[in-house]
Image (cartoon, rainbow, N blue to C red; front, side, top):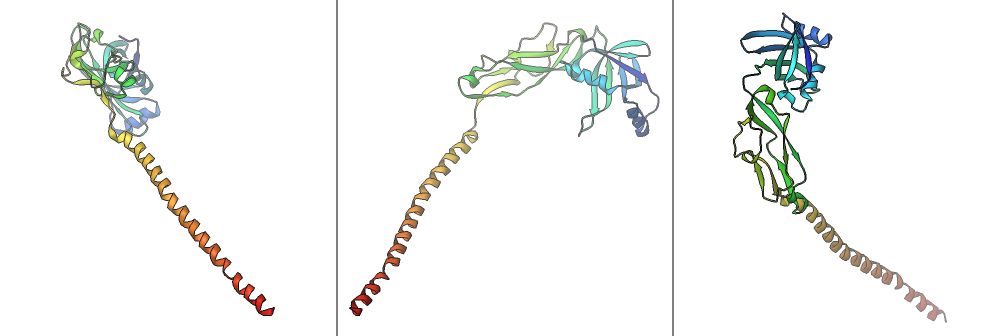
Amino acid sequence: MSDIIVTAQSRSETGKNVNRRLRQRELIPGVLYGGKKKTVLVAVSPKEVGVVLHSPAGTSTLFDLEYEGKRHKVILKDYQAEPVRGHLLHADFYEVALDKPIKVKVHVELTGVPVGVKQQGGFLDFVTRELDIECLPLDIPEKVVIDVTPLELGRHFRVSDLSMPEKVTVLTEPDIVVAHVVARREEEVAPAAAEVAAEGEAAASAEPEVIKKGKTAEGEAQTEAKPEKPEKAEKKEKK
């Protein structure tokens, strides 16, 4: 469990005008729900919620929501952000019971350089970046780390190959590929080959052009030399 604390204030009104006034106070609207309690309208700091989002576990982080003098163990169940600037607009907090399993998503992180990339010229394709799991709130892992160093060309890691803590149940299908090393596509090599071929064609086409110009120059030189003959004939007539 993290040490993150998000402070929530009570709110009773809803609507665009209310949300605008909250933003002027550097707050965003949110709701607190879960368990047997009714949904509660709250207002929170987007900066404090941002700390949760940027934590290693992200939205699966278990943290404290401080509301009306009490702390509630919650996870960030959902949130809305501005599509252009990414500013947070709304947050949903789900209160959990520490003795009951919950379903969350955890991030997958790859470490190492695969043999298939380093020695066999392959490409590492990271396919599945999140896993669905179920466990008690206090057993939620921050992330799942996979060492891909031994991965050879044409080999893969599936969900079934992962080593998970005993208290964590993976809900993602076991046959799903997490990462694999594949051969580089021919399209990636084609541009370089085409460039070399184009240079060869350019060099070949340049030779006839030079020869043609040379012949023309010789022809012009011969044409310019012909007028000298009439001058010699005039000198003979004068003699």
